[in-house]
Image 1 (cartoon, rainbow, N blue to C red):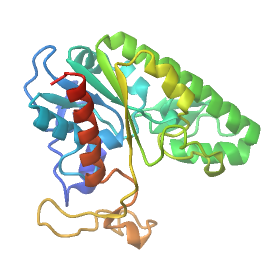
Image 2 (cartoon, one colour; image 1 turned 90 degrees about the vertical axis):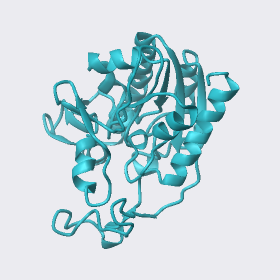
Image 3 (cartoon, rainbow, N blue to C red; image 1 turned 135 degrees about the horizontal axis):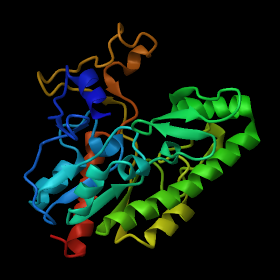
Length: 287
C-alpha cells in the first residue's frame, strides 16, 4: 500500500505517512484537523496517492480551496477496498465532498479472480492456477494465455459488471456529494484495447460504465491528459536525480527506468487534475 511506496522511495520522498485503524493502514499526509462535514475526501489508487509527486492533486485542491482534506488514495485500490473497511467508509461519509477516482476494473473481485489486500493482487478461484496469487496485471496475461480467449473475455465482462455494482454501492452508502474524476492518458471510451490485454488505465472501464455511474454522481470531471513522461525522479531531499529502483533490490528492472517515472502521473499531470477539480467546484459554488 502507501508504505510500500514510502519504503522504496525514501531516498527521494517523504510522503508524511501516518496510520489509522490501530496502525494497520498507512495514509499519505499531511494530516489535517477534520470536523464533521467540513472537509474534502479523495479516494482512488496510486494516482490519487501521488507517487513521485511532492504535492499531489488532493493536497493542491485542499490548499487552494482553503479546505481541510483527506487523501485516502492507496496503490492498486478498487472500490471494494473502501467498502470492506468501515473506518474508511465513515471517513468518507462524514466529509463535505467526496472526489473519487475512476479506479481500474482489474481491481475488482469477480469471475475467476478474488482481490487480495489492496486489490492490486488477485487469487485464481478455478482452473489450473486455482489458489495461486499474483499481481492483477500478470494474472490477466496468464488467464488469456493459459485459459484462452473466451475465458479472458468472459472475465473482463464479469469485472465490468461488478465494477458498476460496486461504484453504485460505494456512492449510495456514503450518501454525500460525489464527483467522479477520470484520470487517464486516454479520453473516456478510448482506453479499451484488448490487443494489449489490459488496455490503458483505468483498465476495462468503458464509456457506458461511466454513463451508468454518472447517474448517481454530482458530476464527472474529465482529467484526460497528454503523456509527459519519462519524469526524472528528483529527490526532495537534495534536489538531485536519484535511482529509486536500485540494481540490488530490482535486478530485472531496465536501467533506463531506475531514475525515471515511466508509469505514474507526473507533477504536471497533478497540476492539471487539481485545476480541473477546482474549476468544477468553483462553477458549482462549492468554494
